[in-house]
Length: 371
Image 1 (cartoon, one colour):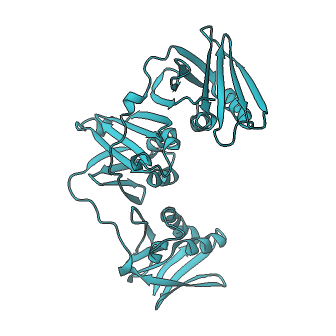
Image 2 (cartoon, rainbow, N blue to C red; image 1 turned 60 degrees about the vertical axis):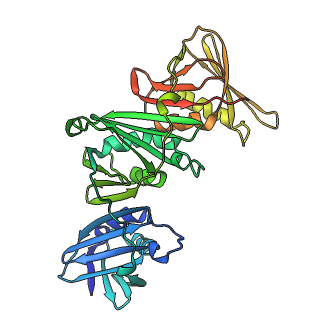
Image 3 (cartoon, rainbow, N blue to C red; image 1 turned 90 degrees about the vertical axis):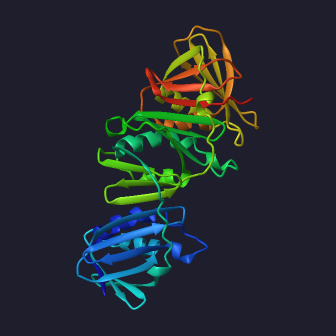
């Protein structure tokens, strides 16, 4: 029975959209598979890891209706290995899927479609947000690096999404640093009176960053009590939400930092990268020594090796010596695309606040460390 016949990329492109969430090793073998459903001329591909699910599709030929599951990564690797101009066909013969292209033949084992675990769709009222893919993708990029990884405080292993009256806020923290970004998504969202707060899982955020395009095509976000749905292009992405209480981020952001230092982002980034080479491999600490007209960046390690960088700045206040994890400083500099960044400091025991000059829609807080 013919499932698909056409150009390689017509099938490979939607397959790659769903393969990102497929685990290489799983307790349930069928979760390594992709579900392929053919209903007349419409072919649907669906993958899940139980926590999230991606569905997309393409056009097919022939009137047959059939559904089967096959190893997602094997199928993807075979298609990738063929030339871009290749014509391919997928045929189901009993319990084996045959892929043909030119004189190449591949026979893959399948598992029944009825054994494939689909996510149960959330019931009840859902709040809907409408914006562009570019808006959300760029906002994710500003904060996602600050998410925790496998923290025992499970609610930190994700990203807080807050929406109210046409404003969308994204916040991420791992307990040592916090990234905050807000975006005006007014228009159709301005009438949203209720405040919506949900926590998106880390894997969901990373997959969205991979999938979303940097263009003005529409993105619709539907938020229910336990589930979020993202619809863009011909992709429908559904994810469970993290059930927990996110920290009060507004209390974490410092309000009265008296020492304000504007810096060229690239200059600071390169100076920190060089100083990082001689930091302690475990603690990764650098000292920022603020003085009249200069910012010194100092690092040492267990072998008593030292690095010293100096940047000329416009500053005439009192001196300050404060330590930070260099990776936390580099993370933000690597993920923002601006010429100038502003560092705000109070004293050697207070967190640093990094902002974009004249823009209060982005804030990054880093806790100090003893060096």
